[in-house]
Length: 342
Image (cartoon, rainbow, N blue to C red):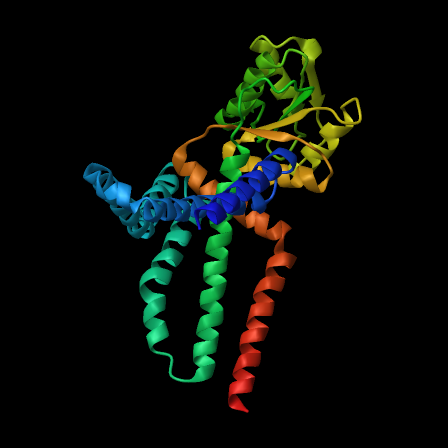
């Protein structure tokens, strides 16, 4: 048994490593990491069983393992409530500090849905009398669990794509994505992105900085021009700055910035706010742009709300795939209902 588990663990490590090395910009990075963690947990149990006689002679090790297991179990049980409280608290913060708007209500809306799924939806299930009602309850429950699992893998994949070993990547281009101006003034959110790009530029002496953003409503000039002025004021050599001034969204940021680059396969890094990196990488992947992503920090309460918005954006990009999965499950369940009524 130990040999089989060792082989499975090594195989998972190799596959996960290959995905992270060759193409981490998909949910497979998060899914494989999650499976790997589960495998390591099972592997630990198998090792404990195999070496049970040795463990019986070392009582302190047994108590340590039991304590770790208890802590892990309590964390798993407490996580739903922790998630609920966190989104309520941070949702209230963003409304108080950023104002009342549909986008700023996302955290509170998610908290309300999460509360309903934990406490109200199970009660609804006990009220189902007929087979059709039960089938519909299962379809809705599966859809909710599927979306929650998808969101968890999205967040995990996003975190993995923000993880880099070292800052020196021999980059050729560092693309900083725009985030809107206040008239002609650089906002704190955009300043954090530019500062992160400048930091990377210092660790990659051959790289050039592409500052990407056009002129939108309420802006006195293209974002790229204001971003370039900000970077030069902070010591970046003008010769290392390239301005992209036509784009109006992330997809155009990437496409138009790529046109300004030389070479068939330049080494590219995208810099944006941390919560926005993963979706930007997916958009770049759809355009055939090979790159890595670096994130600038922002306020925690804003990050949670924005992460929900990013997940909604991901769902929009991949909606056909997920509609097919949920639709197939619903059809199978309804066919099962049909067979039971014949």
